[in-house]
Length: 311
Ligand code: SF4
Image 1 (cartoon, helix red, strand yellow):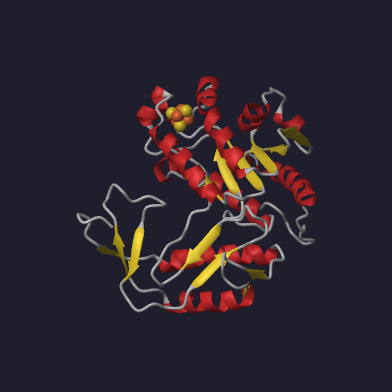
Image 2 (cartoon, protein in one colour):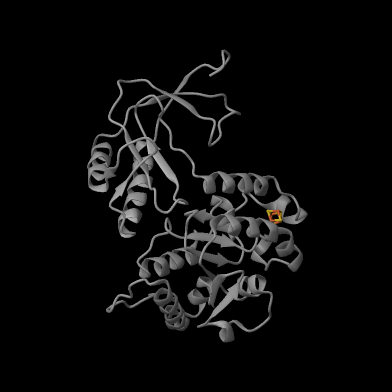
């Protein structure tokens, strides 16, 4: 902390941090990991970590003093000092595989949630997107850029068309009615939005919900490419014709592209109908569920016997 930076007391959202760790913990457990270890420390049993996490979830954490100027706060620049007596440290870092982000939660002298390498790299691209004005019309009419959301280590990416009004307002993809239906699809797979990643062909809303132009898609393609290079998913589900045609650079009708994998740079690509189309024609939900089961089988995900799929 420099001399001209006065410490400011800000509320520390312990519930949000605990929730993030809880989700990571569950993900590790689902992967069969039973213990974790951080550099220079002994191994910790996940059950023990879970007990400590439960204590934090129940009792919360005290307020922290954060030393930072308004314009210096970034993922790597928040310097924190505990304003209360130190509590037991909860530290989680998965050692297998090495790409797994490190999550650290501590009420000792280093209160911080460290971004993973992938999160840091995505944050850089996100900042560039926020400053982008390559599409003059979109840049002048958007409320927010819609970068994408999800797990940087996701095996699966859902790839949609373009932000709509709700997404433009909230800066997050698939949050409107179509987004709610996508959530149901994800839930039917036994997954959550925190386990996958969601992207669109372009990051800014086309006025009046018109289709993105080829030029706009071209302008934005570099951002998508960099996101995928960072995330390195195994699977991409293209939602609708625009996403499918844009990603696979073809004009084949979506009905003929469904139900099979295409290869794009080693990624298995599945094309299916867009959730917005399902809202207009619910009879197509069965087709989408067939496609999703095809995907789940290849991913090694368990298909519920009694599931009605997408309803
Ligand atoms: S759509 Fe993409 S390329 Fe166009 S202004 Fe937005 S971020 Fe930039």
